[in-house]
Length: 428
Image 1 (cartoon, rainbow, N blue to C red):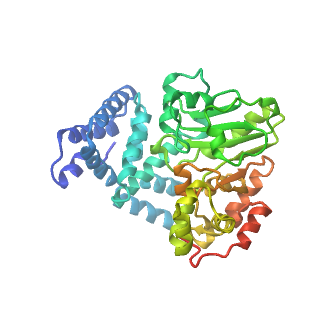
Image 2: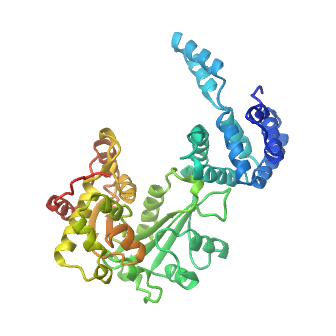
Image 3: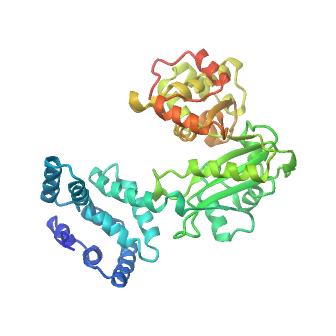
């Protein structure tokens, strides 16, 4: 296989340490190798070399990979041929000419034992600096495409997590939980009791690493507050009386898979599994944070309102009724009216709202002082949202959301938004 030399690219900009040089030689050899067994051996060695690189050496390797583009002359010739004669053969040649050699490199590295995990880690490291290094975006684009292919739903397996699950996986739940931190083993055990459920997606190449997990409480009625659900000393409820499944935490575990959607598939499959296990469940809902609301308020609300929020009495729950009403109206306005993106594809500014509404859920209710933790107060002003997943309406809501930018919301939330006196600047 005729490919540009990694070594020429490394030394064209100056020297490089031995680790990068050796890895570059391995990558060149891996791309040139046609034998399966030799390719696997080279890929295994390359993965080991990658893991041994320090932070600076990894960044130098990213510089090399980012410049590893399709040959320009070959691409131009293929494009000209297709423009002159748009035949299927010329289209195939154009597609082949536009493929970056690094995609083939990623495929071959993935053949090594531990190769998938190494490439997920590679993208995690890449994302930490990509805002400062826009020249790495083609590298991220190719790597994200390969990971999206390897981590599609067909390769993932859904597993229920309970107290009998391996300690290694349970430790990962404590480590990764991003919505409501787990306060040690007693807290985790309570979250896995009979009135709770926890499910995770796993990939065959990362058997002990959850990709994403969701925590569910089986309750009577739709929960409005997080703290009772998180009370590790709370009595275990009789699930026979439960009529609602509350999704109160969902966590993406692998930063290297950021931008690859798993949550919508997870929630829908969990809801279907729970419906089979508990036919008497009538509602599937979330108790969700509103992570951007407080930040938006600080940019858009009046000084007088912000001063009231900073009053120490606020954190004790001693809030005037008029202020409570005003904040609830502003929160409804924020979720329904404040958008990001262009007019053709405007979505809610709040990332959690985008996630659930894009899945086909509807915004059912806002809950005053739904999360009184320090984190809840600092990011959501204590307010939480219930999004409801009505299984028969998910597809319709999803289509209307993406085609018409329509947000499915209850009349109560719509009424709050209509009553709101919007701040002077209604967008971030």
